[in-house]
Image (cartoon, rainbow, N blue to C red; front, side, top):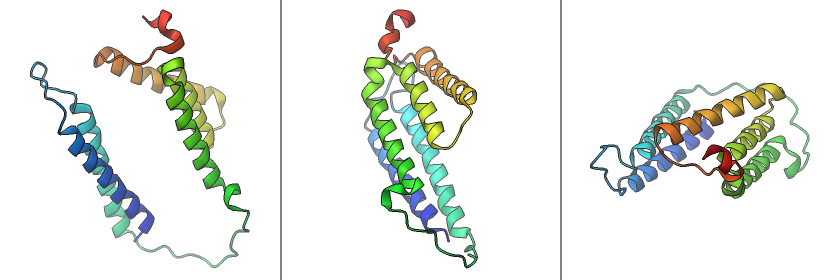
Amino acid sequence: MKRGDFVAGAIGVAISGGALVIASDFPADVVMKIGPAFFPEMLAYLLLLCSATLMVNAALAKPAVVAAEDPPPVRGLFLDNGIVRAMLTVAAVLAFTLLLRPVGFILTSVGFLIAMMAVLGMRRPLGMFGVALGVTAGIYLIFEKLLGLTLPAGVLDSILY
């Protein structure tokens, strides 16, 4: 059994359960029949499905045979690549949160996605920019045009509206 995957799946199940409980208190929309709880509930069920799948796969996994090799040298807590990536991710999420309103959704999201791809090891600038721009445009079109929800425009306010 892969204990880390099982624990991560259990955390995902707990988060999705909490989201479903919170979304159940949202008011119903009598006009469109799709109220404000629809999108959060849809995401919570998707998270529940993925987390449960992760837990089942972790429970059914055979223990890996580890070859005897020398342990990696101890480099210090903050020099470990995983911890550095985690700290950079937290900093990027914080920056995204702080800059979302003043800078706007489009510019902030493109910058955030490029930063996350760099943290995860992608090194092709053109590919990073293209993916970030495409994902941001897709999310913008879904929320602004399809769902009719306004996203912060920031510095692009005079261009977009």
